[in-house]
Length: 252
Length: 383
Ligand SMILES: Nc1ncnc2c1ncn2[C@@H]1O[C@H](COP(=O)(O)OP(=O)(O)OP(=O)(O)O)[C@@H](O)[C@H]1O
Ligand SMILES: [Mg+2]
Image (cartoon, rainbow over all chains, first blue to last red; front, side, top):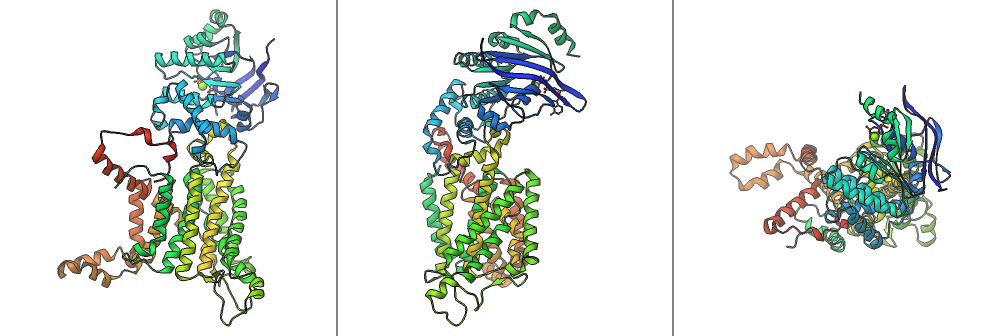
């Protein structure tokens, strides 16, 4: 009934002899939160890399709202409305938090090349307001003029989330967004992500923390050794013996 | 004295006043002669332009001398073919440097880091060698391109009687040598500084800094980095072309050695010495290096004896030969040491040193009250 936002069709990716993804199929529906779980090295980050154009799949297709993503440049994919929070925070460490959040807004507005060198930063009041607003949402407003590099790992993650939110993406990919966060901050992030969900943003979230998965996900797919071994509602997946085995067996 | 972040208007006015007053405050420092003043202004433009690329994007070009050279050749050709007026010379110098920068930039920007630097170096050395060999009809090879009595000067020949001797460069009749030449360069320098400031303060400048800080992040937020990088490269090439044409305007001849890698290296030194990515740093670095090259190098033991004449003779006789190692032909040694000290202890260059001093002085007085609220993000780059 609902539209497909992201569709992975038979994705295959190997690094040398190692098959990181084999025959991966994934359907993510409009407005849902889709969690991907799996042991370390299962290929979860690789899957997101394929979606945002960082890696080209060996075969298979990625489509976003019916448009082909495979073979497109990362900036084109971002312009189409796909944003990602990386596993290791990708921020601008030498800049202030405010600049960190304002920059993506400029990228979005002028990404396809527009030379507005003559309009000063001071005239960008609307973007600044929006950035301040988003910093409030992610709980970093009081550190607005601090350098981003000095933040803790958890705060960097929240900052990066803010940098993605200002893009107002249609699809948000989150790679372990709560790793390195305190319980308190994790809960705040969950609340924030729930709030975003109520605005109708589609999300794919990779997470090890089952508390986060069960709080947020509508659907869960389990990835192990490059293959999707189970999928469905969170409650069902939890009871699946194959999943239990992958988690226990995958640790070795 | 009021310390703390300056507004951009104060910064600009301060810069303009300091530049225009150079003949005054350089007098006691022994630097007040037009040739040198012109050089300060011209290399200031060169370095400020270089900093738009290197300071904002972090891409280190080792080939900017090529644009300097092309600017000079274009200007001299404008003198030979059209008119001795400085304006067309500038227009052509900037234009051709821009074209060359677009070509070299287009190819070099396919790579980053050291490979980018090597590519720009290779292209510049190629231009240098071509100027000596294949392009001799245009560049006049080793002799260099000079004016001659037989030049057509189409525009001038309509309006002005050809005199005996070689005509001199001018701005609608005002001779472009001596102090008028300096003030012409100084005004252009101030305009260039203003443009660079606007670029630093614009979303465009912020995006370039974003590319320097984390190019991947910029891409994954939707920025097509290539046209932006190319624009920055071309703008900085055009600054170099302007500097090159001004070199020809103040002294109408152009030689291939202007394109040599040492000239490319010099502008790198200037920028790093003054402060990469700061507004005033490149100008400071350019001034310092040119001052060393022209004034310090002229010091000899007699001059030193005079300076140290307040000391007892026996002491002076020991000190002078030691100090003498660092001046005169030893000025490179001093510059080298200074450069090392700065790179190791002050990676932000002289500007960082000055701002640390300012902070220190301010901190003495109000260390308890840290006013975080009044530094807007616009104040980040710059001194
Ligand atoms: N660029 C690459 N080159 C070579 N091998 C890679 C590359 N990226 C990932 N791999 C390998 O592919 C496999 C899957 O890696 P991936 O990062 O996708 O795992 P993951 O599920 O995200 O793990 P984690 O939970 O540790 O983040 C790993 O064995 C990894 O070593
Ligand atoms: Mg991963």
